Length: 92
Image (cartoon, rainbow, N blue to C red; front, side, top):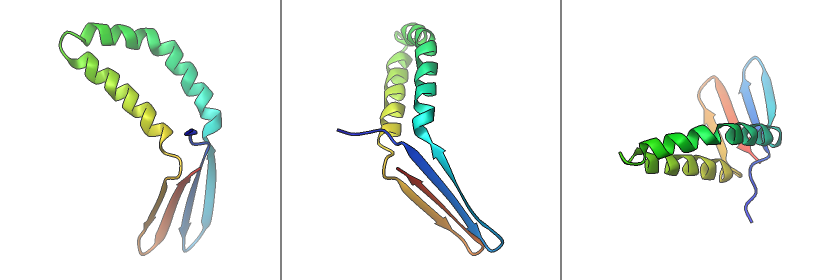
């Protein structure tokens, strides 16, 4: 079973300072779910209105792809470095 990401750690390191910040996704998930529930009637009406033109199916697939992409983000690590600074993003 796949679990959604719970934490993101962003770390920035350069010559002057070194800092990191933890972003708790587990606090954002209920807020995003509430927003999705509140907006679901509008999303449903939008999909019904645009379905005959073909855009409704695309919108529905895009919404599902965004949810699946967020869910699959667990384990992502991005490390970007240049001559002066380094940025590392880890998703747990």
